Length: 169
Image (cartoon, rainbow, N blue to C red; front, side, top):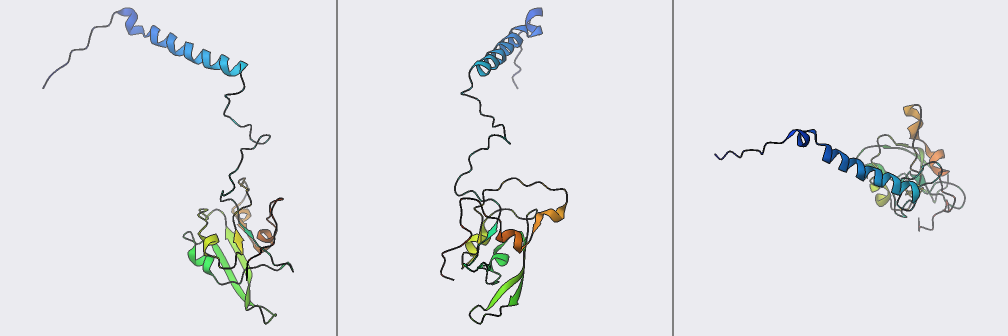
């Protein structure tokens, strides 16, 4: 085993004043540079200035509609089966139109349990559910606020997107 002897520091070296003043100088330099030049600021002042959201960002869910206003969902349960978090609850009911086999009488998504993986979107064969709302703000006072129902999902459309789908089904 080799022992390495540390050099003895004199009184002023033990105070670390040189390192302290060097750090203070760097901090002061950055503060003054940001005070007089606004081009390198990377902080967004959130409520006033929102960060641009990418086009393929997986945000809050929405249900697509048919032109008559009914949901495109056929209650096939593929989205609920594909969901690894088990946050989708669907209760199927018979439709009065003989061309439509069934529809979701209840369609709830628990947003607190959802992991936003978009497997439900990929599993849906009739393009009934999407995650392109670009809504990232989620705040509420109770857990019940985060369990969204079919009516909320049918009307949860961004301004620049159509609530209707051009899918085949």
